[in-house]
Image (cartoon, rainbow, N blue to C red):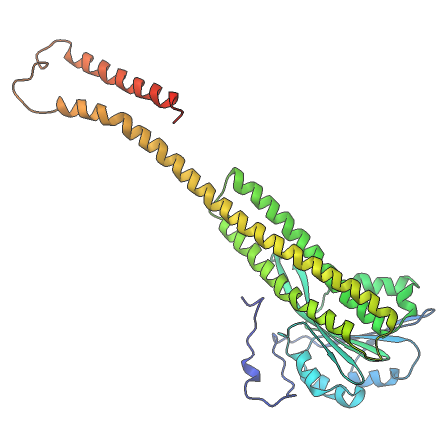
Length: 354
């Protein structure tokens, strides 16, 4: 459940705009990396402190500032004065359990996304908040830890003088959002492959450990669903925004993102039904296997009922029994018991109970 929800007890009772980091504490240093580019030029900078960013204001090109690590709260206090970022926005950046949303301020746009990535070490989905602040010159992205799904976008900006190098910060923000959303398809593809493999396994030979696999798939789908459903509302709010920071050409790209989100939601709902069906197959397989075991035991017990009856009769301790003195009594009884057993087996097979 920690991947789905995080406690926020540290913020209880504090006034609005209080900068409190609600994520996991870290001893690592906050890393600030700046990418500046235009159609003909590209450069990267490692920033030691936030104050250095002021020297890039009113300079040529689009500036993408990526901040990794949110635990040093004092770093964010200067954003209000330097870039006019509202304290409530910075509070939402540090509150890393935010629902995906879009806020339109006078001088900037604020977007919150859930960035999902597959952790091969734990074989689970990592859930991280990605916050974007979009101004006329800068795009700020905030994330808790190193490693994201945006490396392909960075390489595209660096190596190709394509549309992204010619357009403004609104298109860069779209590209970041689109890359994060498209990665949901990659996660769902992996989940879909696991569902199909598990479904085939259930039909052939279900095992006790399959319940844990079904539970993990169900939890992953809940996580992706919880992250993607609010994105539809977020993108819709962007399409309805009349901010001067969004150009008319960029709206068309956001409509494409909206279509992708709808596709993702449809896939998630389909996979949820498939997981429920897999659970039904598992329960049915266990029931069928139990029925097979009970059928075999019932047949064995049924065969031995008349044999036990005969053995019970001849096990009685009466002095005068007609067959006691017969020289062939023992083999005759065994022969009769054998004939009865074989006849019952023949009868069961004829009825296709075996």
